[in-house]
Length: 154
Image 1 (cartoon, rainbow, N blue to C red):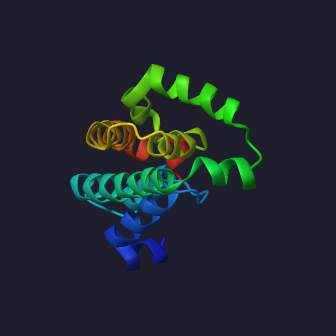
Image 2 (tube, rainbow, N blue to C red; image 1 turned 120 degrees about the vertical axis):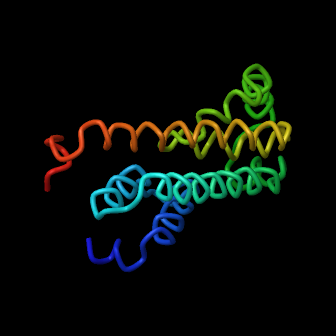
C-alpha cells in the first residue's frame, strides 16, 4: 500500500491508462486499492476514468494507424477475413465502444474501431460512458460493502 500512497491519484491514472492499452494490468484492482488506502471516491473516479479513457483512445489511434497491408503481411490475416470482421464491426458500430473496458476483448474492440475507421467522436463518447460506468460500479460496491466486504479485508 505504500507504493499506492506515494503515487496516489497519478499512479491510479497511469495504471488505468496502461491497463487500457495492450499492457495486461487490472485497473479494477487499482481503484479498490486506492479506496482502501483512503482515497477519495470522486477523485479516484475522475483519475481512473480519465486514465483508462485516454488509454482506450490510444488503442483506437493505434488501430487507426494500421494498414490492411501490414495485417495481411505480418499477421497473416487474409483480406477475406478482414472484410468478414469489418462486417461485424459495421453491424455493431460505436456500440462496441461501450465494451472496450472489458479485459482482453476490449483492447481488440478499441483497435478494431480505429482500424475500421468507426466515427471517432461517437466512439470516444461511448468509450467514456462504458469506462465511467465500470469505475462507478467498483466505487459503489466499495462504498456499499466497505470494511464488511470479505474480499476487501487483506
